[in-house]
Image (cartoon, rainbow, N blue to C red; front, side, top):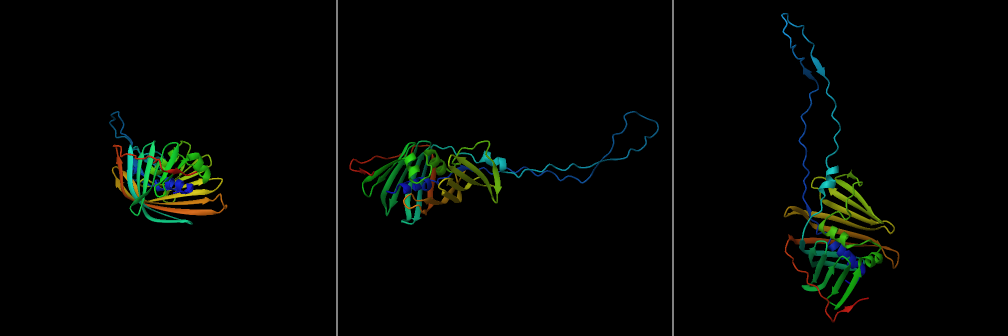
Length: 299
């Protein structure tokens, strides 16, 4: 917990999988009836009464006009249907594993609570003991190391500089609830990419690639690249299950590739999250957090 990069990783990946977005199944338009190759239309009978029978009129043959090509369904709908979830509070009980060059944590437990646009709270347990507790506000992140009676305070600009990746509360919250990490803009385009709809977004130095399922309109993969450094965060959602009126990914894999400022080498961190229980609630679940007087602040 003492590594600032790990702090960023935990908050941008441990919490990332709380993805919850309304299931929007694309409504397919009913197929149009198949047009006949030719259609024979009889000319109308003359209105005036004539004693002699009128000469027969040759039948009028209409050549069918080719149908205009239809756009593949889902391109424009995706922009509308990948809607942000509206919630008051979110709670989750999860298991996670972290693997990197200098760390190997397996099957640790974590509780997560979120108050929309305001607070992100988490508690980490190892061997049945609470090892760490943290809270993120719109301005800062505070981590309590309960094993060593220490605490650390980080602001988002400092964290961003420390591992060359742009972080903010809004970005973390979007990743937690499964929303698009950047707001949609009318000029942005969606294109087909194999079995996905791919939406590319950019904000300053960050490029975001959102891979959206064609059928359920769920965010299935996310690739975030910080352009100058080429540091990347990849998120793969899986194991979608129904949660209230939403589809929720109960498993996610986060892969973080980053360049170290210390030696200039690239390293990788892998984090897998498996959720046991997730709830969307209206009642405040509580966000207990205080810094004991005996705790020492780490520089």
